[in-house]
Length: 161
Image (cartoon, rainbow, N blue to C red):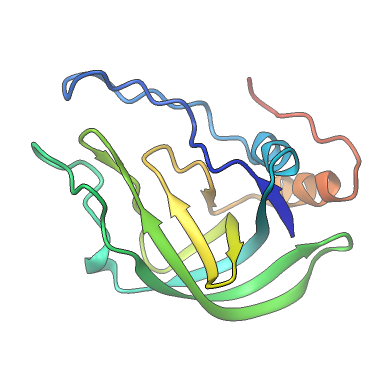
């Protein structure tokens, strides 16, 4: 488990007509943010399965929901440890989509993903913002090796700035 910021990536959406502006997704940068935060997170790699119809649409019309309802997902995969993605985990993860103006975070089921999942007394929560700050679908082997390297304290420089 690691810790991370609850804040999401920078969003620029002053008006509904403005474009969404997100940092280029970078799991290594997200890992570094996680390490610097007080919020407890686990890094999961595996498959999320859930009722797709419960997710908000990626681009909503005029007014996004104030707070989309959580979606319960079944996760099957592994948790990051200092040795790598060596600890198996199967269980429920609460997916929390959120919107920024007309853009909403979403995920398709089933989703193969590397994710930074908040650990709370109530269980595991994956926040899915419009920039998808905490979830990286279909991660490459190179990405997974890099995240293991981050966990082991080796080079963890972001690949993109």
